[in-house]
Amino acid sequence: MRSFFHRNFLCIGHRGSPSTAPENTLRGFEQAIGDGADAIELDVQLVAGALVVIHDEELDRTTSGSGRVDAVSLDLLRGLDAGDGERVPLLEEVLELVAGRVGVNVELKGPGTAGPTVDLLRARAEAAESILLSAFDHRELAMARNAAPEYPRAALFGRLDRDPITAATALDAVALNVHRRTAGAALVQAARDAGMATLVYTVNDPKEALQLRRMGVAGVFTDCPGAMLRALAVES
View 1 (tube, rainbow, N blue to C red):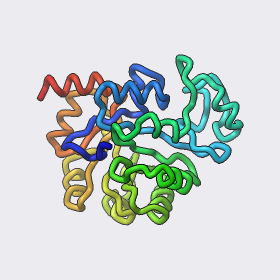
View 2 (cartoon, rainbow, N blue to C red):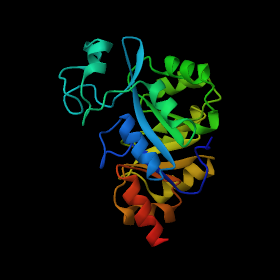
View 3 (cartoon, one colour):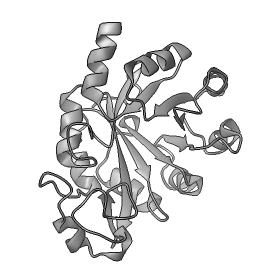
View 4 (cartoon, helix red, strand yellow):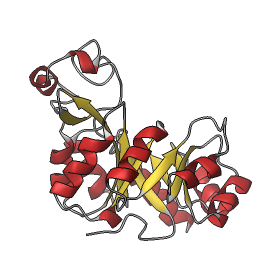
């Protein structure tokens, strides 16, 4: 079992390895792990009572289906092609695939995902140190904290239209997950002073990743973990 924050600078496969395999699929996650990613990031939605791994609210971009994800049956969703013959996986299937080999950042998408997610993590006795729960909807993170405080949380931000440190501290978060355009030295230092790491999405340029590492960022989410790791190894 690998702790999520097991080294100083993490390369996290954003939805697996979408530059080389369909995003949010078992093949993509295995590709990221095989390429040496320190962790994977995935998106979880609740569909007909099941936790499914898919990012968009609409099916059109990543599957052979169309329409809203929450408007289809689980059987229909599971029968769609998610790219190259892959299927939309359940969260439990991804956790079984990972089997503690790398950390897992579970992004909670949509209302009502926190409770079933932490229930599953507990039922599977997933090690808390290998899991990171994140969400743009901080109400979901608050519910996760109240239901299962042992699982670490990262406050996810797009635009910084409020004080991120105050918001994250209120959630007892261990990290800020921020967009690359909003990651600056002052924010990284403020997070560190508050006892939190900073993770940055989505970074595909190794030079930018190196700059962020020098800034003190704890890791980056990338669409190309294999290429990123090779480039960082050369630069190091």
